[in-house]
Image 1: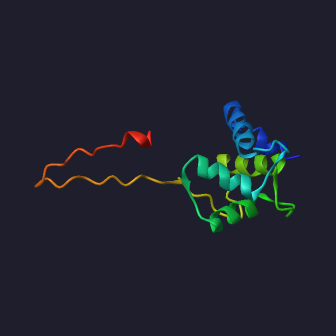
Image 2: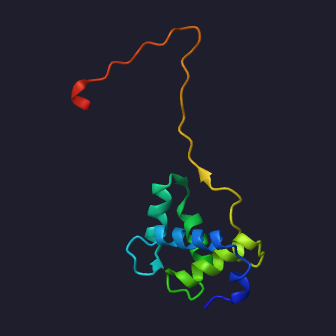
Image 3: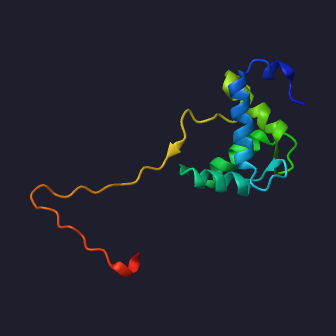
Length: 122
C-alpha cells in the first residue's frame, strides 16, 4: 500500500477528491485506469491533450509497468502532487489546457444578419 506518511499529509476532502476522480477515470470499474479510459475522461471533460501527454502521465503513474494505473498507483501519484512532492518523474502541468471555443465577432462596419435555422435540423 501507499506510504502512510503521504496519506496522513492529505486533508480528508483531498482524499475524497482522489477517490472520486479515480472512479471517474475507471469507467469499467475494474480497479484500474487504462490509457483508453484516461483519454475518454479527458475528452468528456473537454481537456485539451495529445497522445504524448497521456502517455507521459500514464507512465509516471504506472509504477509496475503493466500498462494500467491501479488505485494505489493513482493515490500515490496524486497525493505527491497535492503535497508538492518534487520526486514525481514527469512534471504535472500547473493548469490543464482547456479548449476554448472560438467565437467570431461580426464586423462593426456591417450589421450582422440573423441566421435562419431550418426546422428539419431540430
